[in-house]
Image (cartoon, rainbow, N blue to C red; front, side, top):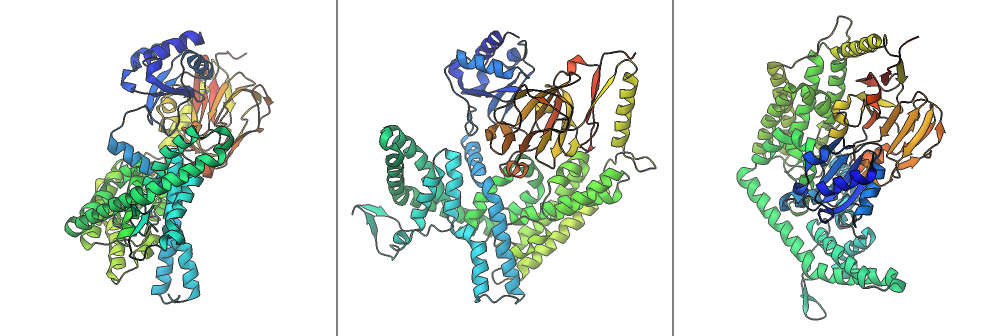
Length: 631
């Protein structure tokens, strides 16, 4: 490949240097951040020699090159005066609403575990008080109340830190600004008398504990002030002058303008939802109960978290997520359980029962992706059940008093206030969701994959057919069997949520959902390439098979965080040798899918590449059929 020529043609067809904000590359593709993606000639780029495909994803214009991508990217950078694109940015012009909710999602997503855990502590404490096992006036109650309430009281600190990462400013300075809002010297001025700064700037005294919008606006202001302060501060004194300017200027703007404005926005939102609860309270639980699976698929459910948090801060209870998600999650789990009960397919039966139970607990992804979406009709049944239960939840006006995962064990979060019927109606909502979904699933039915008398599934039969195919082809070609480089569960490449991998653009293979954060050499061979961020590695086996191991999807955006590389380019490796270790749980907490494609990047050199489609990753993940004849 002529890297310079390829780079020149790609740059011209994406709209030239003026249309490019930044460009970087991962293991297989160029990632452009464009001013206007519509200018790019997609079909023209696909025709360039060496280009394997074009994908537009997450605001990035991606050009699939393959293992030569690093060389092409270097040539493009030489041709244009632009830097690397940033994950948080996007050259795609989005509407205000999409950009606004996208920002809220990015800020709140890392906070969700702390919210859920704290909410469950408050719920359990309420249950213990209701059962008279703990006295609300005791020291034990006060201590555990602090455990559960700290997240909510100090919300400005936590959201400020998260928002600073999104707005690309110093998160520790953001925490200082949050501290200003809750500092006794400041809150002590709230005596009812007028407060002013410099004698002429009015300061509206507000209770900022548990507030949401004010700190978000303040940190947004900080992002601009900080850039200006860094620009004007001389290098010898920048280390203290820039943050000093940022704290003073942002602090003044915050307590005089941004904070009160944010408080007003929160009050308006609260008034709006008060009106909706009073005159059409059934609408939100019905919509959430029906369409929550699609919100989960797209990640949109995170967008509702800030609104519900505002409800807790202003109203003392929430109606946005809890009731509707309770109806939906129970329906998802029930549909999977019914499929497990009725299926003749051994593997579907096992998956239905296991994912159904976790669905009832509020963790719906296994049921959603493993059963309901896969078989489609159970998904429709769960939407019917979620709608019916959501309607009851809305008509009876149930609401939550803290946040947690919506499932059977979430009933304690409905304990609070003076009405015992709130928790009773929540329990009835669960029963309606289970009953209606079960009946709907039985009536609608589902297309059960065929099973043999010995209990083996159609998927297992397909695997046998693939093995037979491999044996037949072996008559004219030898087989190279490659084991899995990771421990985990195998899924077909077609199910990977990335078109470049799922369509086999880079090469055939399989994908592994890892259970352990280690990548080991599947065969003896040589490391051909290791990406700087540690998220991907290319190696050539002793038999000449070129493997690409890509840990997770879009994990290049982590820029090496949570990855540790144990080998270098050119290193010879032995089968079983540790190549890369990674923190699977932290990567998932950061919002990334850890599904790992294992691909034969030189697929075209062989008769066929046959991959395992399911089951535990281990021996015989990929079978490569060569062109060599048997002796």
